[in-house]
Length: 134
Image 1 (cartoon, one colour):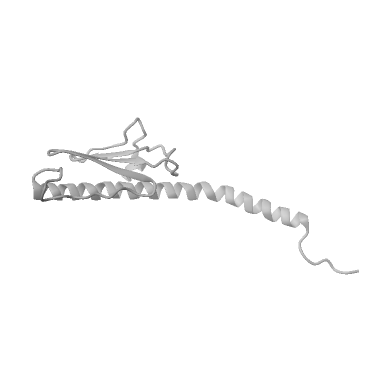
Image 2 (cartoon, rainbow, N blue to C red; image 1 turned 180 degrees about the vertical axis):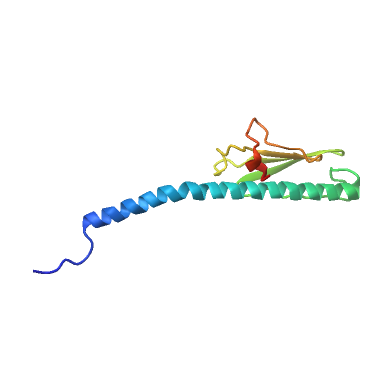
């Protein structure tokens, strides 16, 4: 009688089931970490852009661009696009979620920051401590 070599079908199915169970446990945790990282990245970009606009204000005397002084801002990240509404005395920075991004269903929603440092999550989104990293 020849000894059996290799893996039986039952053993293979057990290994596939165990890998599936481990993956179903690990993926939500991984996804949450990606979302947390994306939130941290866009909050940092909003504050960095606000600093650039404050520096622009100290040079030009206004937040909007002039003929001699312009301040380009970043366009956003892989998950958010950054939009700036600027006039001479104020600015509003708005980070909107990109369609098709992992952040589309994020409870924090979009982010908004103005020249007074007021932070919000427009459109009725949750603005808990986890959203702004505080």
